[in-house]
Length: 519
Image (cartoon, rainbow, N blue to C red; front, top):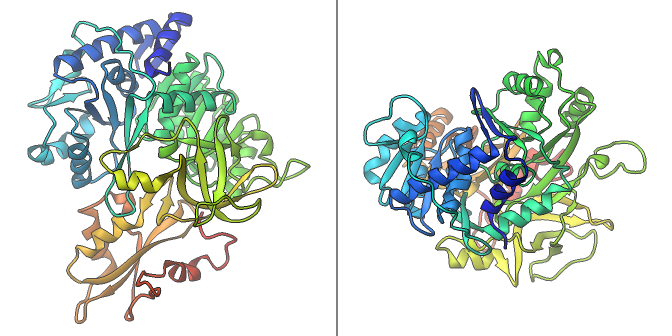
C-alpha cells in the first residue's frame, strides 16, 4: 500500500519526540504533528469536505502549509497548491476548474481573494491560516483545528492525493492528477540518490506550492526529518537560518543558488553544516555552479530533472559528476541518469525509440507517471501514449544513460525556474486591440536563464509602446509570465507551409552563439 499519510504514522512511531516543524517560535514534534493533522482533517470534514473533494491553499511557506499537505489526504480529500505569483483571473480559473470546496489563505492574499470571491463557483469556506484578526467571512485556523481528531482515511495507491496545475500549450492550465502511489514511489525513488538521511534538518525557502518542494516535504516525512520554514527566499535570511539551525539539506533553483553565493555578505555566515543542495527547474549555468562549489566546498550538489506529470523526478545528476576534471568529468551539461523503476527513452515523431546519441523527444514510463489531466482526456492521451509520458523536451542519451536536453518540443520557456507556456502569454497579447499578430519566445538571460520576449505586429495605423503592452499583460496573467521585452515588426511573422509561425526562425538571432536552443 502506498499512502502519503503512512509516512506520518511511521515518523511519529520512530521519532515521536523529535522535532517535525520549526517556524519562528512555533515548534511541534512528530507526535504533536500527527495529532494536529488529525484535528485539521476533522475540521475539514466538519466543513463538508468529502472523499476526493479539493482543498486549495494560496499562501507563502509555513509549518501550516506542511500540515495542509498531509491533513487533506488524511481527510480523504485532494490537496491543491496554488501558485502565489498568479494574477486574480488565473487563481479564479484554477479554483473553479478544480471545484475546490475549501480555500486556505494567509494575510498576503486576502485582498486578491476578496476581489474574486463573488465569482468563485464552488468554494464554500475560506480558512485564514495566519494568527491575529480573522478577515470577515473567513474561518480562523484556531477554529479549524479545534475539531475532534478523525481517523486517517487511509487513502492509497491510485486514489488522487494532489492536484498540481501547470501552464497550458493552448493557453489553458492543466490540472495534473497525482496519486498516492505516484508521490510515494517518487519519494522512494529520490531518497537514496539525493542522500536523504534520517533526522536531517531541512530548510524550505523554495515555494511550497511547487511540486519540487512537495517531494522535499515527502522525503523529510519519510526520513522523519526536522523542517524549518521561511516565507520565501531571501539570501541573507536563508544563510542565517543555515548557520543558526545547522541546516543539512535544502532545495534551490539555479537563480537562488546564484543569488546566495554571490551575496555580498556570504562570507560572514558559517555554512559548513549544509551537506547537500538539490537544484532543478532550469539548467545551472556553468559559472554559477563553479562559484557555488567554490563558496560551498563541503556541500554536495544534486541536479534533478523532471516535470509535474512525473511526480516530478525523472533523472538525477550525482555530486561526483559535478566536476570539470578527471575521468568523471564531461557530464555537467547532462541532466543525469534515470531514477530507479522507470524506463527512459528518446523517441521520434512516429513514437519509435531512436539510437544512442540521436536527438528526439524525451519519454519515460513508470509508476510515477500521473493519472492524467483533470477533465482533459484528449490532452492526457497526447501526453501518455502506450504508457509512455512524452515530456515535450528534446534530448539524447549517451552510452552511459546520461540524458542531455538540447531543445523543447513543447512551446515552453523556463525563466527563473518557472515554466511559462508561450500560448498563455500570446493569448494575453492578442487581447490588446492593437495587436494583429504575435509570437512569444525565450531569449537568453544571464540571471533567469531565459527571458520571455514578445514579437508583435500591430494592426495598420495602430501605435503602441513596449511599456503599455507589458502593463496590459500584467492585468491578465502572472507577472513572471509577462514579456520582459517586446520587439515590434512592420512585416508579417514567418510562417510554415501549414500556416504556423516559425519560432525556430525567430529564435535564431538570439541563440546563434549558443550550443543549444534553450537554457
